[in-house]
Amino acid sequence: MSHITLIRHGQANSGATDEASYDRLSPLGFQQAAWLGAHMRDTGQHHVRLYTGTLRRHIETADAMDTGLTATRDARLNELEYFNLAAALRDEQGVPIPTEQTEFTAHLPRVFAAWQNGEIINVPETFQQFETRVSAALSEIAAGDGPALVITSGGLISMAMRQHMGLDIRAMANLALAIMNTSLHRLFPVGGTWSPVLFNAVPHLEQPDRHHAQTHV
Picture 1: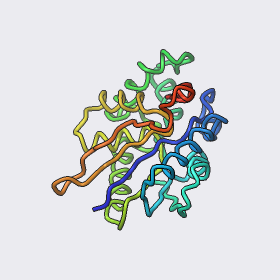
Picture 2 (picture 1 turned 135 degrees about the vertical axis):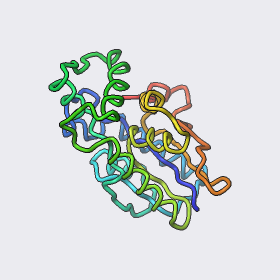
Picture 3 (picture 1 turned 90 degrees about the vertical axis):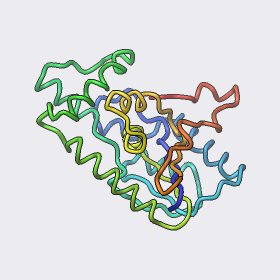
């Protein structure tokens, strides 16, 4: 069993209102990823495998990090489709989509709970399908040889933590809200199972002149 380091993509188009327009890095997102790549090289971090989802923001993050590794693209590492879930919940139950960031923190847990409970009909995938694909992808990566980097999204990382910490849906949503862009999260084999040993670390953004880059959206 090889340890896995999950990385959330750099800041994307935070003003987007749909999946397609969100899926590209902002200028700051490229810079965050470049800083992370430089930090990993400077500190001699050793990884022999690189995986990403197939979303543009995942690929752009990997390219900007410049790890020197050839990426394996796996659509199972793609993010849940929040915008589409939110639109379905609005259309089916009249729950408005937030227009202010402060509203988003209450909206996401509501979407997650309705999704898990099967209360949204027109979904791109069920909650159980998302859960299964995340588990399958990470299990396959874990079975490979050598430490692996996995560049993905916050929702997927929160699901991975849910699976390995037994979190309920509210806790999973709270984790998703907390995850910063280009943050590091590590799963390590301990006693024959996977244990989270790192969460939401941004050592490459700790210098005072980079605090502005500690973004959540």
